[in-house]
Image 1 (cartoon, helix red, strand yellow):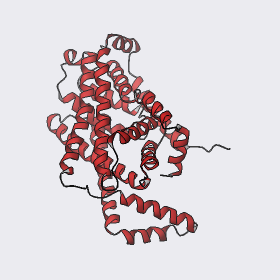
Image 2 (cartoon, helix red, strand yellow; image 1 turned 90 degrees about the horizontal axis):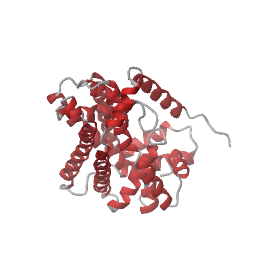
Image 3 (cartoon, helix red, strand yellow; image 1 turned 180 degrees about the vertical axis):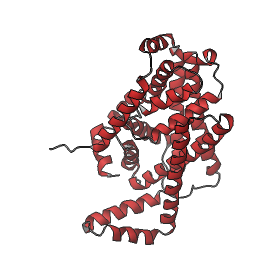
Image 4 (cartoon, one colour; image 1 turned 180 degrees about the horizontal axis):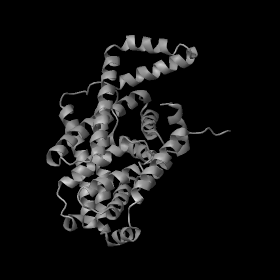
Length: 336
C-alpha cells in the first residue's frame, strides 16, 4: 500500500526544529551538563505523582461532562485519557483526543462523536481557566513575556469564536444541519448522511451538566488541575535549586504555567517538542535564570509530563487488546 505524504507531521517537525535551534543557539553545553548533574532527582517522585493525580482529576471532571449522555466510571475514563495522552506524544494534530472518544465508544457503547463533543467542552473550560490564570499573572507579574500574552489572547479569541459557533449551531440545530447539507452537495449521498450523523451526534455531547451543583464542582476541579501543573513547576525549582540561587518568587511558577501552555497553540511536532522548551526557557529568563540552566530545567519538566505516560499508555493499550496503529487508523478515519 502506497504511503501518502503527511504534511502535518513534517510541518510540525519543521516548527519544532526551528524552536529547538532557537533554544540551543545561545546555551553553554558544559553548563547544561553541570545543571543536570547537580539536580536533586528525588523531587522527580512527587512530580510524577502530582502529574498522575492531575490526570485522575481530569478523568473525574470528564465524568461530570459525560453524565448527561452516559454514566462512565472514572477508572475507565482514566484509562482512555492516559492512552489518549500517550498517543498525543506520537501522533500529530491531537489525534489522541479522537482515540479517547473511540475508546469510550468501544467500551461503553456511547456515540463517539458525542463523547468527542464533551472533549471539546473540556478544552474550552481549560482555556477559560487559562484566561483566569493569565489575568492573575498580569496582576502579580505585569512583565509577562509578550509571546505569552499574544498567544493567550489568540487562544481565548479562537475559543470564544468556537463557543459562539457551537451555541448558534446548537440553538438552530435543524437549520444549521440543512445549511451544512447544502454546502456538501457535491459529496455522494451516503457520505453526506454519514457526516450529518457525526455532526448530530457531536452536538448531542454539547449539553448542560446534569445537575446545577456540578458546575461549581467542575470549576473547582479545573482549578485543582491547574494547581497541580503549577506545583510541578515549583517542585522542579527546588530540584534545581533555583529558589535559593535566583530567589524565585511564587509567581515564577504561575508565569511558567501560563507561558508554556501557549506551546499547545503553536503548531509543532507531537509532544510540543521545541516550542515547550523555548517558551519555558524564555519565561525563566525573565527571572534571571541563565538559558543553559533554563533549558535543562525545561527538558526535565517536559520529560516528567510526557515520558511516564509512554510505558503506562503502552501497557494499557496491550491490556485493551489494541495497538497504536489500529487506534490511529480509527482516529484518522474518524470512526468514533
